[in-house]
Image (tube, rainbow, N blue to C red; front, side):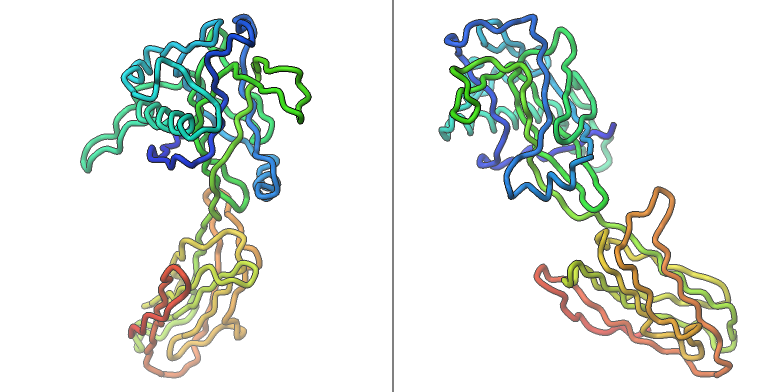
Length: 350
């Protein structure tokens, strides 16, 4: 399972799964014999509808670390692997809260950052081998993105846990989720919605996946074939314009060229095109003495797929010799994306 390296710097305003509360004597003692578990869930709400639909059948890899044990009264004690947190000003003797005040949010975020720093070594300097993590996970597993249950190992199923979801990919999107600190058991507060007559210990603790997604990117390979070639004319250059749009909005534009010095097939790879886009590849220059076979100058891909491993998106063009002796010359128009749109950069003679 690939380890996901998460950035340690996080904004204090980020939303985390906060399920931490000590002391909680009014709830009675924790049942030490009750096994704890984590239930992976997707956030509810209209804003997350697209995420839930896309991730409905997806699974997410998860790394779980036990940061602290918990006694029957609900007080935490750091494990040996995370004993350095004892010196952190935000540990506060293991007293954690899940109230909505700014102070508690800051406490959880800072402790999360400190815990991540212990399990994820700093990036090595140039020429240095990558450092091994100082702490190994208690558990590495995979769970359904919506409703998957993570059974914690016997004897380690209660306490304070650092949970790091790995990246997940669907047909079109790549997801990256935020890590979280979870107390198992946690306190389930009585509300009008859940109808509880009082707060209680919750041994199956939900972890709501929150994060961002980006459209997956893939490549196309433009192949140019020349069955016939007039060597006396020298090399000849073919120029292609590549555009891609999603729902009418241009998301990619580039101009590439291929120069052939003999018969046969050559190719060039065009990278970074969003999966699922409508792609148009047009041969805008066909060499001085060559013409597209059957007049074919444009290839369209309605929904660009993510190819299977070892495969690629092939875009073939074939030209035939016209029996003319026209010297070749071409100009490649260059475009760059300035963050808001595509800007014409200039021409480059070929």
